[in-house]
Amino acid sequence: MNQIDAKFQELLLELNRKSKQEVFNKIKENYSKQTPDIKLALENYYKAFNYWGKLEEARGEYESLYLRATSLKEHIEDYLWLYNHLEDYRSKKLLYAILNNWYNFDILTTKTSLEKNYDQYWDLDIIKPTNQEVIVDVGAYIGDTILTYLNNYGLNFYKKIYAYEITPESIELLKNNTRYYPEIEIRKKAILDCPQKIYMKINEEGSSANQVSEEGEEILDGTSIDEDIKSPISMIKMDIEGAETKALIGCQNHIKEESPKLLISVYHNYEDLWKIPRMIEDMNPGYKFYLRCFGTEIFPTEIILYAIKEKND
Image (cartoon, rainbow, N blue to C red; front, side):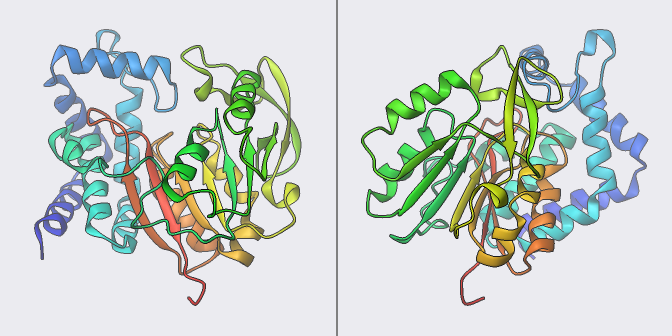
């Protein structure tokens, strides 16, 4: 057994021995030991981005830490399943680092697990496109992911790109940034599990964090990938601020029938890290899973799940 396996097993054994309340108490204790600068950074971040619950030590508000404890304690078997289904030790070390960060506020392991070699999404050891790629970018923002794809692989490695975005200002920049490239189709639609009208909730910290919501400032056309794209798809990237599980349900026919490469954000809550790979496995068994993190060490965000299925599998 190598040290990564041993550390992961040790962490799970400790969590198994404790009740949920004991896990929560331990996380609170570990948080209390952090420096004022780290606490301030975390509490301000959670105020700005409300994905992970509230955290404000001065007011005795520890919702976020309780959500951590709940995920760690109630989904030990799911995290073990994911660990055993990850294809490389870079991924396994990262999963250990994330869970240990949630539990022990371990920053050092997270720091050494961050991806430094490749652009976000485009790990050259994992994503190996062909010249016939039909790519769906859900949450295309201003086209940054599309541009880094073209920079990494060139113009000869796609056939068609569908770019979905909901924010008008971002769409204008998306159009401008991709205007010289052929076969890029921009669609102003929210991607969900089924067609419906929905609202856009504005995030004051930045338009990249705007979300779909049951109420908000602007009514959007919502659809599913299965409904909106009838032709085959070979790659799907998603970063839609916590709506990824619904969007996956809405493209399950493509996943079942075509086994596209999947690049999915799994950091917008304390559940998607285990839930989304489980969903993919249920839809189409045999995908190979990888994890990479392009965020920061204090609290790991920008975590990407890669799900790859070889066509001869």
